[in-house]
Each structure stands twice: as structure tokens, then as C-alpha cells.
Image (tube, rainbow, N blue to C red; front, side, top):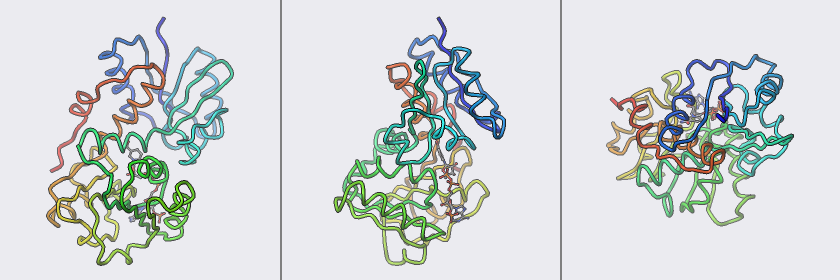
Length: 277
Ligand code: NDP
């Protein structure tokens, strides 16, 4: 029997998840159907109830429902608790299991697909929103030599740094800073996890932060050379990436969780890649 999955969001037309999961199903020989659900604002729980009642097995959750999904779940994985948000649900009888695969998907893209180990590296993350929050534990598990979160609103960066410290007291030094405190510091891997690129803006980042041979990683995807990537390029950085691999890898994590088989992501990444020019 065909098992049903879906992604829920509002808006939802833009979602690549059905394309990605159906491609994974094809390469792994899994018999699934994967659709889009437009969740009414304020009507997340009712929409998920309806999907479950019709036999749905699992859902991906996108904006603006990641917090609603957190509240809806009966069993939150550590990744979801740490992120304070949920991007994947699995339904079994009356249980609703919840995960957040964004962070682990990001790390897998960087380490596995881009061949850039984070161990021993100086890592800088711009932004202190949901994506950064979800990436903290997966980043720390890689044991970088240093992790700095920088944010426009300093208090949020400091809060995340404290949270990270609580989870691994003293092991990896974690700092929350403002952009004006970055002068004179250099990093081997710089992630733009702000939403600035969605409006073609540039965080106030000094171009001097990129160490020789650095990787500049833009979490937004499909936008070509964003202002952040342009800044990195102008600073001499040649290793540039956007979040298309993260998107595919978080989907792959959900697919493994639901179906017990890991799909190869390379074909999906190749098809969704927008050149960085
Ligand atoms: P949030 O809205 O939770 O956080 C946004 C962050 O960006 C905040 O820290 C905010 O700072 C900062 N910010 C916004 N505008 C600016 C600006 N002009 N200058 C400096 N800082 C700014 O967003 P998310 O964490 O959910 O998403 C962040 C990015 O990651 C987005 O581009 C999103 O598309 C991408 N993403 C990609 C995924 C993928 O699969 N590739 C998955 C999830 C997210 P402040 O706190 O001061 O307001």
C-alpha cells in the first residue's frame, strides 16, 4: 500500500519537498505519495489531524508552522528541543514524534558533500534565529576549535552562546558577539544564517573575517551570488556554497527516519542547484 507524506506550510507552492521526496522514493524503490498541504493560518492542528485521519504517516513542516508543530508533538527529539522548533513529524497510532533535521542536514552537506571537516576549525555563524539554534548541537558535535555566533541583536547571540555552553561545558569555546566585535578575527568557515539574503541585504560583516582558504556558506538557496557570497568572493574566497545541499540533506534525514533507507542526494542537488554567478 502506498504510504502518504506531505509538507505543510503557508504559502506552500514554492516548496521543493514533494520533488525531493518523490525523487528519493524513486531511487530507493519506496512506495510513497508526497503532497503539499496549505495550512490555514491558525489552523495547523486541524489540518494535521485531517491528514493523520486520512492515514498520513509523516509530514515536513515549514514556515510559519515550526512552532505549532513543536506544540503539537507528543515526543520531541533532542534536536527539536534544542532548536525550539520542529521540521519533521512521524505519526504512529496516537503518538506524534518530532525532529528538527535542519542542523544535521547542514553539517552533512558541509562535511560530506563539500568535503570540509569542521573539526579543529574556527567557525563563525551570522544570525541567531531558528536555523542557527538548530545548528548549534550538530556543529558542536564536530568539535570545531571555536564557535562564534554574531547577531544584529547582541542579546540573542549571547543567549545562544550560553545555551551551547550549557550543553558541553568548556569543551568548545562558544561566544555570542556583535558585528563590531569581529574586527581582527578570522574564521575558516563562515555561515550566513541570517535572513538578510532573502531581501538582498548584507549583514554588517567585515570582509577581513575570511581566513585564507575559508569556506563561505549561505544558508539561503536558489538566489545565486547573494550579497554575502559576493562579499566573500571580493575578499578572495573561492570556496562558496549555498543551502541547496542543506535542503536536500535535511530531507534525506527525514526520509531515513520515515523509511529506514538513506537516499543518495547528489542527483537532487544537481537538479536544484542555481549557479553562484
Ligand atoms: P529567523 O527569522 O529565525 O532569523 C533571522 C536572523 O537573521 C536573525 O538573527 C536576524 O537578526 C537576522 N537578520 C535578518 N535581517 C538581517 C540583516 N539585514 N542584517 C543582519 N542580520 C539580519 O530565520 P531562520 O533562522 O529561520 O533562517 C535563516 C536563513 O536560513 C534564511 O535565509 C533561510 O532561508 C535559511 N534556511 C535555509 C534552510 C535550508 O534548508 N537551506 C533551512 C532553514 C533556513 P535579529 O535577531 O537582530 O533580528
